[in-house]
Image (cartoon, rainbow, N blue to C red; front, side, top):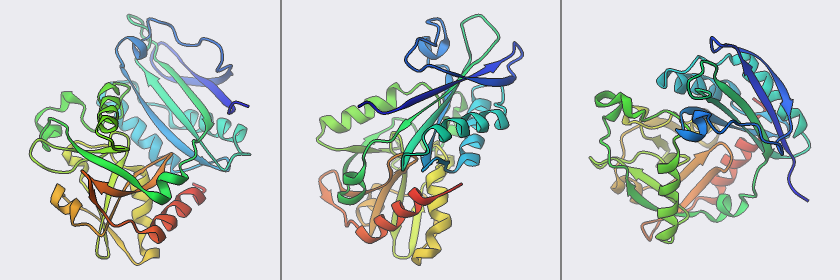
Length: 291
């Protein structure tokens, strides 16, 4: 039996303002072939995890959604309408322990002023192996300096845009090298993020993550983990990190909305310690969030 799927279309007027949403059949065609989402990848998105029907970090995701929209000069999303759309899908998926909703806003059909928006929800994959056994990663050069947001803001580093071909290519390259995932590195030698995740490194009683000023996406999952860190005798801090810092770490994770916290068990073939107890605490906390 296939997983349930649910869809709502967020409607907009010609000035780009959201006016409401309607439920739609996800099995039927909905997107016009001239929409720039398909032809140019010109839009933004967010993926919100659901715990037993409760959207997790919804406000933070909507703030980041608006931030990405501003970076692409898209209309500012109406937080209330988009939140209601997410909650509507969450109610449909409330019988499932873990699910997710993706919200998308595009510039719309080529040559027309009205944006396109939708929210799609379904059940999450089973990530128990990644969360418990850990993942193997390789380091991949992103090809941009860590100051790219300041020097070249038109490259949209740090925006969660639909132009995801490079992210997918990085995942395929990691697989070609026999790894599960990748950690991207700036051309001046600083750790950044995974193709679809945020890097968190443990050093002693600190949890460290690279600064968003290096041209990476602000991590909603990472923020929640840092808020919970005192429960585990730890505290979170933003810091520039190098590959040597990662290899010398007491533990490291790639964290994201749907997979949650996946510990790194090796980097470029070199083993890292996997803290099973802390990983379980992180994932238990993330699965149990109700806001």
